[in-house]
Amino acid sequence: MANEIMNTDEQADVNVTYIPATIEIRDFEKLQQFVTEYASKYQNLVFTAENVKTAKSVRTELRKIERTIDDRRKDIKKQINQPLDEFEAKIKVLTKVIKDTVAPIDAGIKEIENAEKAEKQKAILAIVEEIAEDRGVNSFRIIIDAKWSNKTTSEATIRAGVAEQVEKLVEEDERKAKDIAFIEEYSLKRGIDSAGWSAWIALYNQGASVTEVISQIDAAEERKRAEEERRRAEEATAKIKAEQQQRYKEGVQQTIEVASAAPEQSVQEILTEIEESAEPIRVALLELRGTKTQFEALNQYMKEYEIFVKRHKCAGDPQ
Image (cartoon, rainbow, N blue to C red):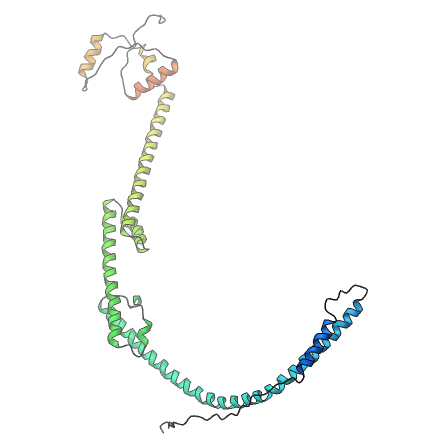
């Protein structure tokens, strides 16, 4: 049986008679004069410890008058509110009947609307999945517009909205693919392997621009190059120092000191040896003057560069 709906143009007639109540204090002026005069007798009085008992008595009398007046106010208010309370109780009975009837209707309407929304949402997701799959985009990346769930929103509007998002995502993916390819190519040119450039791609995926990534690659490679040069320099320096210390310990080719024990050669003999060498050799006869430490340093230098030295007797040399 179909639900029968009663149609009527008549409005519920809430026929209520309201007669405003009149509240009047008889001889108000006389009462006001009494209160004023009674209170004025005790205004501006100064009480001390000696007459504190009198002060308490005055306070009690004044509060008694105040309480008498306020109690009468409360009694009148209660009498006035009584018909209002009775009226409101009757109104609540009537409205409860309406509310009890509306509640299941309202629940049924909401259930229907929720079912319609669920169906609309299902249709929206199907549209999203269809368009996203067609363009090779993950459907979870599509943002569902709350307006698409409205009854008034057509399928064409939904499709247009989804397609717009999908195209933007496709363009974004293409741009990112080109950027990543560029980063990989640039990394290869800088001699960075896949394990190295994966970190730079991760940085790009975190939101850094291509320019920022390239700048950081250059900075990192420059730091790496500088560190390598520094390391090589330290190794070379350490090697030279080690060799010098070893030669010094072994006493190898103490050039100037040992040369005195070698047989003397004529200048012609020295020139003959020079001519037989592959590289042109220069010969210089020098007079050296210095301390023992300075001569040791000079010996070390000549040993490193393999400079031939022949010692000549000088005046003052021991026989």
